[in-house]
Image (cartoon, rainbow, N blue to C red; front, top):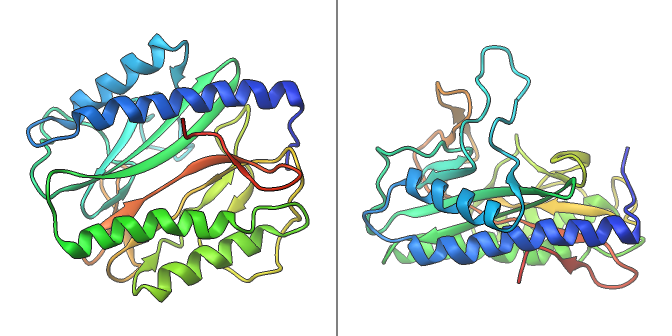
Length: 256
């Protein structure tokens, strides 16, 4: 069931989303060769808690038997890792890496969710193009995030834009509604047919998140039960924001 947020609930959501934006502002200062992904995790958690929020991903239960709860405050995925990478003191960023970070902050009972892909130092032109296309795919999708349109209009726009640039979208994972729960209805794939799915209404809050692969769309899950990688070892990027459907244009809540 898709929840329509009240004005009061939207104001509370905005607070959680601003925390997420502030976390990325802080992380960007530290993403450089030599830092570990565990250090980034610690920086993010400290920032979140200083702003009165808690890391919603820490202790998250996938519901899959035998898979431990997620142990960290953020997901940090490097190069061919698409999503859900677990921070570690042994993972050290190096020149040329592309690093995708996914962050969810819980404040006042509501969640804010966003993802960014950062370039460590200098990397190849093709890697830069991947990161740029992934980010722009989000903005191509939300052009259709207006009342009366359907979820499929957003999905279709994202998929068509990515494929027109020679890249692939991840098909097994998707964006989602968000609010009191981290994952709410509706599901929002990064591909699909225009004109399909539920109609968009003011008060809906959605996490739109293109996940893009340089090579083929095939993916694998690592033994940790969380980390998703590209099957062919090609690079991947991730870009996400929480948005609000308004009477007119969508409002991006996770940008300062």
